[in-house]
Length: 255
Image 1 (cartoon, rainbow, N blue to C red):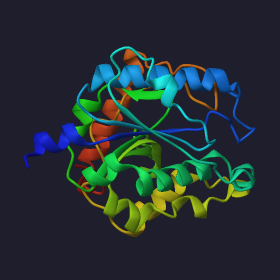
Image 2 (cartoon, one colour):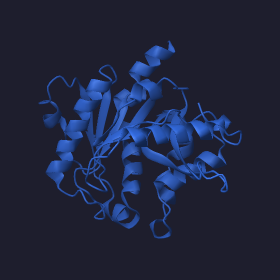
Image 3 (tube, rainbow, N blue to C red):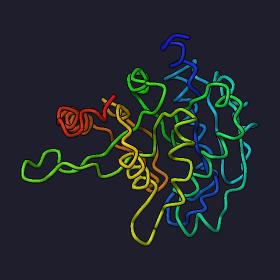
Image 4 (tube, rainbow, N blue to C red):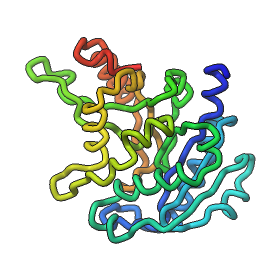
């Protein structure tokens, strides 16, 4: 099987919770959350018409009837189950995200068949997905967020892994990240992003940071507004990544 074939068969997992169990997010309206999930499916279909889509909802909302009405959206595997509401309210939406991915890996025929997946939070899409996924190594592609890249007097460091979007082999996820959400300590400001970072560092996962970084579009559930990806912001993000990749301390981390 060629690399190009692998790229086009990677299922895109959209993680959803129509009912926001984390009451700290601003976007609470279930109808609007469901509408935005449908919008993301249409965006993804325009970006990658050939890649299968898996929509998994952790508030037990069945999207099947809604998806069937979308024009030209192709087939979408719809999964749903009830998240542990008490634990999400205790640890935040990152905990629910971990549960959703775990459920999808266990129940999605598309993901199991492919042996890998690209995960994106529903309501979002990745404008340059094709450019990012060209780097697919069969293991993992992650977006690292670095501090102090433009500060010559401060040490550059990996602040966290952006868990809104990543691609991963099932075996890699199960080996390293399956229980990442269990480490969340909300009161200490330690979320899923920091947990992913520490797993990445502890296991020295070289060649797994994507470059250029993904251009993530859509509505953030925490803010309830569309991201503003200006040309200046996009350029600055690419330049930040290019500088970090040139740094001999981090170059082996990149794909």
